[in-house]
Image 1 (tube, helix red, strand yellow):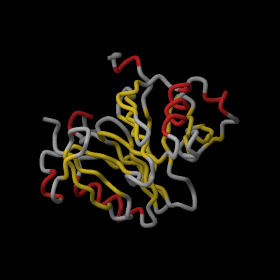
Image 2 (cartoon, rainbow over the protein chains, first blue to last red):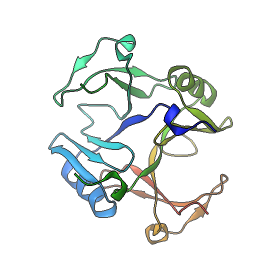
Image 3 (cartoon, chains in turn green, cyan):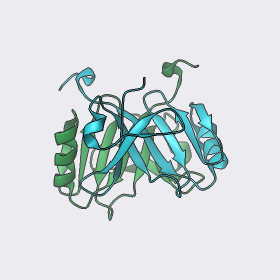
Length: 104
Length: 104
């Protein structure tokens, strides 16, 4: 088996929630996680190995996010309000995948 | 900020794919990941920090999976073909969350 260090990592997973506050409360009640950001339209929870984003469905599709040093090869990078730059692609099954430039 | 070691970890994320083989190929082409398991109904990809499951929509809902030493408190644990035992709950927003007993 390859060493984990030689594998790419998943930066975050984003899942839908109409009521961000109650979803954040649900995860905080059941799991040890840290709220990195929260407003009425989205929240970002830090777990021990990956981040979980809760997003209102109107603003973002559910997606899996990767950081890639070659992010711009996937498409034009769009700046986001949290300072990241990324582009969205679809996997072979039509799932949304966000490709983020490395955090600067 | 808390140390990551004190936070719970996400075991896996499962996302839908009608054609498992082509979805596996898509991820393998673009990312460094390892195929831990693959058949026509599901596949399990290992990334550096978390596993990504690809599942045919008829068999499993998209979900986020946690390992918990108190998994049985969430509901009756059902054995799966991969040797794990788990129960499914819904988060406050209705997303499926799998709670797995620790691997034995």
